Amino acid sequence: MKLQKTTLILILLAFGLGGFVYFYEIKGTPQREEIKDNKQQIFSFKEDDVQSLTVKTKNQTLNLERTGKSDESKWEIKSPEVAPASNAIVGYLMNLLVEGKSERMISVPANQLTEFSLDQPQATIDIKLKNQKTHQLILGKPDFNRRFMYAQADPPAKPDGNVNVLLVSTDFENAVNRELSEWKQLQPINDSVKPTPNQGKPTPANGK
Image (cartoon, rainbow, N blue to C red; front, side, top):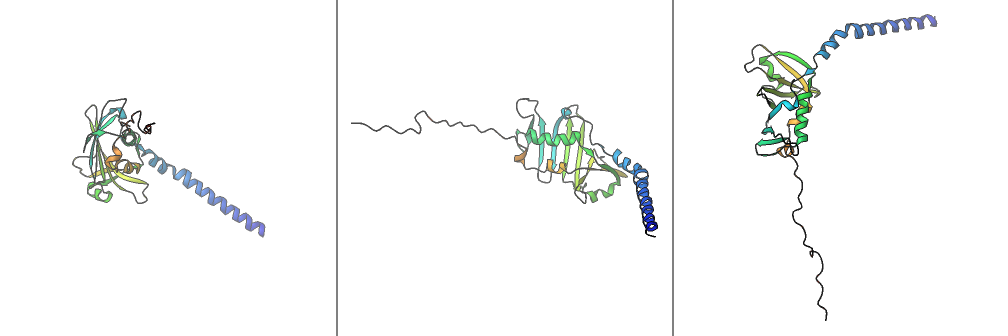
């Protein structure tokens, strides 16, 4: 009797495992491949194609332009003040724009953009290429578990009907929400005040 009960349990487990494998490996494959196929490049340009960037957040509007210098900063802040830009900070944003992929794309009615905070975005990035073509990335709010954030790439000027909303990395949020001082290149400290040869030496006493 014990043998029959054990055998029955093993058979049920085998059926359960077989059903899981069937639904996960066979039935679930098209859905997983559909999500995988949705992972695509946000933009197709290369880093060297970019001439200028305008990063607009709720706190400031920052204009950056490529300088073409190789021995100093490759980027320069044009406004709100003129200063050399940090290659590392701008490079971090550029890498996201060039290499970044969308996790998936969803189609929603244009009047539902408010649900993703894309009508009043936390940041807008305008990109101008050397060939005078332009691109734009609008960053909305993070999703419910903050794994990704909602975005629009090159949105239509007058949306009509459904529009495409992307799920992109939250690294974009970290890349744009910075103080102006973080965007600036750190200047080397110049020790311009040099001591005179006799500075710091005691004055010899007058001997008799």
